[in-house]
Length: 423
Image 1 (cartoon, rainbow, N blue to C red):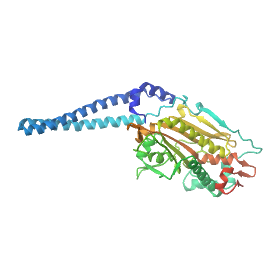
Image 2 (image 1 turned 135 degrees about the vertical axis):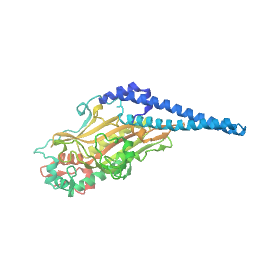
Image 3 (image 1 turned 90 degrees about the horizontal axis):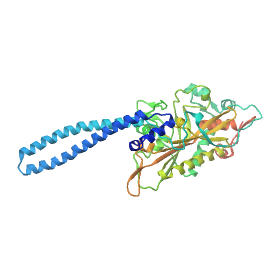
Image 4 (image 1 turned 120 degrees about the vertical axis):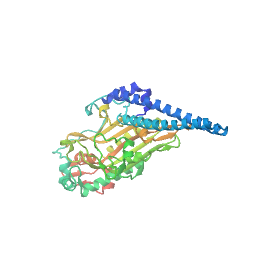
């Protein structure tokens, strides 16, 4: 969430910046600052009462020593009154703090200056396109037909076992999944990321820490009996490793990676865009997460973008990189780059990765800080990215590397699959 100090000192800039998201923050900011002023006034009064009690406590002792019993008892009575007033005021202060927090939870991150204004994906900017659309000398098939033809994925069996959006991978389809996971993890390790295997369920504090909660869209699966959530991405448990942590110095650059299944309700999804692997409720993904000194954020973002580009190029896929407009940028993100692979079979672009910088938005919630050289504390910056999400990568590989007689496995994957073709 945004820092309250930033809203106090940069009120107009925050309101103006959020307009890129088509988010009118005027009313909520005014209400927030009104509550904040009441909180500060009450806090000052509370501190004044505490100071007065300290003075009286010392006076009471001195009065008793001097034998001034009546005056000492009067001072004790006044102290009791102050304690009653203090207790009531503490409740008020806590209520104001809770209201401030709830207001801050409603305000998205302010987009970076480079983020274009816009309403939706139509206003995103293509910053780079690598490769060219593949031309087939035959009628290219979409991945759901290829999966059935070569017995790789059984969508109907998944519906039988669980429901739509939970496919069953079989034979070489399952091996391809496992190969991609290992390939992505190995590439991340080569790039200096430490591998973690985190829990697949998180508590409420973790969900709030990275901005998935409050879950306005109802996208997270909730386990009511245990008050836990299935993770929508490894970003949540990995980043929360550093919740309530103060790094001891300015000399840090933390790089984490992890493979996990991911669970998303995808409420409201329907139509042709959800067919096959295009949109699932459960899918596998390798995530990369970074915790950085604010001065290194831009460099870290560039490195993450280049890392994802390298993966796509090794897989021989034609892709483009988009800088998302304000209206299409996620709630917690200050800037996001999406990677899309072109499917010649579906004749559409498929999103396969997002790389985002959050600046202090997550670390404010997480209370993730570092010690500066002059022993003060400062908020860290966080970033994350998909490297990569498997469903649409699998779809892209099947569709773009198909031939009339089978599917060619990219050379970089062959040491992991143990086969070079699916036929």
